[in-house]
Image 1: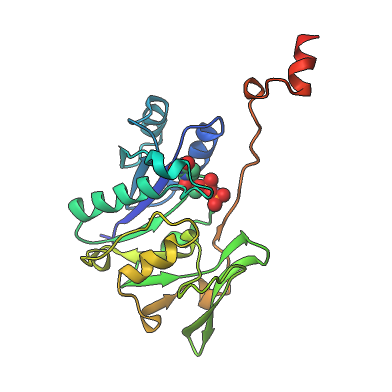
Image 2 (image 1 turned 60 degrees about the vertical axis):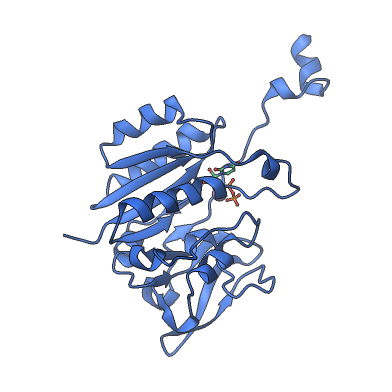
Length: 239
Ligand code: UDP
Ligand code: MN
C-alpha cells in the first residue's frame, strides 16, 4: 500500500469550529491512506467534535491536550502547541512508517498536496499561499536544491517556514530530541532543528516550489455579543 499520511489538526472550541472541521473533513474524505489526528485544545475530547468526526468515515484518532494556563496568559500565545506535541507523542508511540503533516483546521488544501508529500524521505517543503505581508512563503531553489527561504518574517530563523509548508517522514520524527517548543513564532524552526535537519536534506515539492497547494486561509471571527457588555451593541439590544 501507499505510505500512510498522519494528518495532525490542532483545534479548539469557538463558534467557527464545526464549520472549519466540516470543510476539512470533507477534503480529507478524498484522500486515500490517511489517518486524521484531531488534537483538541480542551480539558477533554469535545463531544461535538467527536460526533462530527464519525460522520466522515475516515480513520481518525481524537486526543485532547489543553494549553497549559501559564502560556494562555502570555502576550503572544503559542497556538496549537500543546495539542501538536500530544499528537507527535501519539505518532511516536503508534506509528513506525509514513508521513506526518500539520494541517490546521482553518487552512485550505489542494488534493495534489497529499500526492506530493506521500513519498517524503526526511523532510519535504513547498510554498504556502496567503501568508504574511508577502502573501507567499516558500523555499528558494537553485539547480533543484533548497538554498534559502522567501518569507515575510525571517527573524533569524534557520528554517523560516510556516507550519503548513513542510511534511516529515515518521522515521525521521523518531529522532530522540524531536520536540516542538512553546515559543510563538519559532515553533516550526525549532521543531525542524530538533530533528537535526540539514538544508541539503530538504526535498522540494510542488513542481520545484512553483505551485501553491496549501493556503493559510483565516476565517474572520465575530466577537460574541455576550462579552460586549456596555458596548453600543449591548445598548441597542436593550432598546
Ligand atoms: N489553535 C489551538 N488553540 C488555540 C488557538 C489555535 O489549538 O488556542 C489551533 C487552531 O485551531 C489551528 C492552529 O492552532 O488549527 C493555528 O491557530 P490559528 O489558525 O488561530 O492561527 P493562525 O493561523 O492565525 O496563525
Ligand atoms: Mn490559521
